[in-house]
Image 1 (tube, helix red, strand yellow):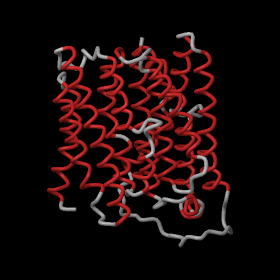
Image 2 (image 1 turned 90 degrees about the vertical axis):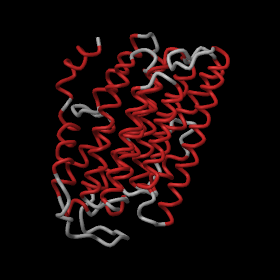
Image 3 (image 1 turned 180 degrees about the vertical axis):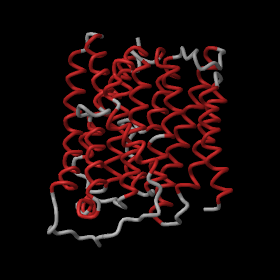
Length: 348
C-alpha cells in the first residue's frame, strides 16, 4: 500500500477514536465510529484476496448495521427527552437498543458471529488493529452510559460472552479464530464489571490490548496462522516458541503472569458486590478458555520433531521483521503482576 494512503488511513483511525472519546453529543460520537469503520475497511481489503474482500464486506455490513442502530437509538432518545447529550440516556428502549448496537460493534455474545469469520480473512497486523484499537471507541461510549443501562442486561451479555468465547475456541485449528474467541471472552469480563467498577474495565481493557498485541506480533514473527505450523515453531526458534507459550498462558489468566491481575480484581469486585454465583460462573468459563490456550502451548512446546505436519515447514525465520515492539509487549505481558498493589491504589 502507498505510504501516503496508509498514513491518511491510520490518521483517520486515530481521528475517529479521538472524536468519539471527546464527544458529549450523540451525532459526534456516531461520526467518530463511522470514520473508524471507513478508515479500516481499505486496510482490510488491501491484499485483494477473495477471503479478505469477503471479510471486509462482512465487517462493513455489521458495522453499518450497528451504526444505524446507534443513530436510531440516539434519535429516539432525543425525541423522547429533548436531549442529545450522551450522559442523558434515560429512555429504556433507546438504552437497550444502544447496548445491542455497541455489543454488535465490539463482538459481544450473542452478536459475536461476525468476529471469528472476519478475523480469519485478515492478515495478522490488520487483525491486531481490529482486535485492539477498534474496541476503544465503543468502550468509551459504554463506560459513559453504563449507569443508565439495565444491570441484568450487562450481566447476561458478560456471562454469555465469556461462555461463548471459551466454548467456541475449543474446536478451532486456525489461530486467528482462536484469538477472535479469546477476544469475545475478554470483552465479557470487561462488560460484567463495568456497572460496579468502570476503572476495573479500563484496567482489563489495557491488559487485554497489551496481551493481544504480544500474541499477534509473536505469531507474525514466527509466520504462523495454524496449529499445524505452530508445532514446527520449536525446532525453528525455541526462544520465540517458549515466550509465545507464556503469552498465551497470560491471555488465559494464569499467575504469576499479567493476565491474572484483571481476572483476580474482577472476581474480587463481584464477590464484594455480593454476587458469588456470577463470580463462580466467570471463574469456570475462564477454565474453559484456559483449555484451548493450553492446547496451543502443548502443540508448540511439547510436540517436537519428528512429528507429522501437513504444511510446508518454513525452516528459516524472516529476519527483516522489527523485533522491538513484540519484545516490549512480551515483557509487559509477562511481568506486570507485581505492580498490582499500585494499580489497586489507582482504582480506589
